[in-house]
Length: 328
Ligand SMILES: [Zn+2]
Image 1 (cartoon, rainbow, N blue to C red):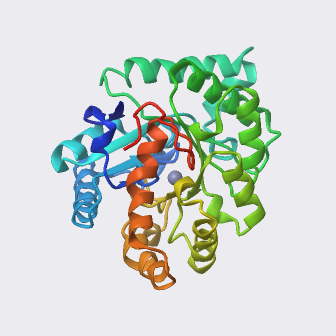
Image 2 (cartoon, rainbow, N blue to C red; image 1 turned 30 degrees about the vertical axis):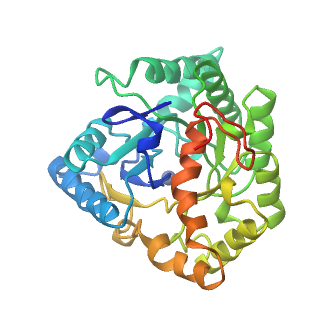
């Protein structure tokens, strides 16, 4: 079974310990019009990313997925260069960002397009089957971003587009949520034919609603505890307690742990403190707390090593089904 990276397709067994939601670079649409900040040096961005990736290698990681939407500054050239210089596996996404941060182009385009979902799905399928631009490099996942309003026409279109493209190419979906409505979105994807195990419901750790967490894992999806260190939204104490509850309920196979760090930006929208969050935070600061509470290190290792593999192998968490790879 192969998985796509910024260095081409690799065997899924080569992924190893993988962070499933970190960003090398982001750029909010319009960044280039900030002339106070537009002297963004591409070489400096690469150097910063290489430095961060080398730190992750020293920590034992071998892969990361940057699920940046196309319109949030996805930069496949940069991923390829950083991957080439570090030997690290960098996976990336196709997909558009949610309505709140959508570019005017897409608000307008999806407003006039008679079948917006079909149009957007065609774009995703093009990238998944032929690669991005002339790079030949293919996305590993479809990013599906939904905001706080599940009834928004814009976002219903994005859900449908992701489902069409996922069904056509068997590509898994990784979602951005605001820590709410992940269950509603999952149900809609299910109606559209996407099996739950093909979906990571992202940012569920924004919420401390354990019944919500249970609904996500009971449905058979992967649950994203992928914002460790983002304490402006939720405390790490709460995140850690909720994660422990899932592990104690025997749900370790459903959990995806990451940080949603941003290594660098184009323009100057994010405060400098947001760019210094450390993608080694879980391993260094949270893992010892969980170990002290009796969670075996082997469980934590398995979350980073086996769960991403299982997801890319089209295997449902918690079931000993062989997916596309056979059991390890
Ligand atoms: Zn993110």
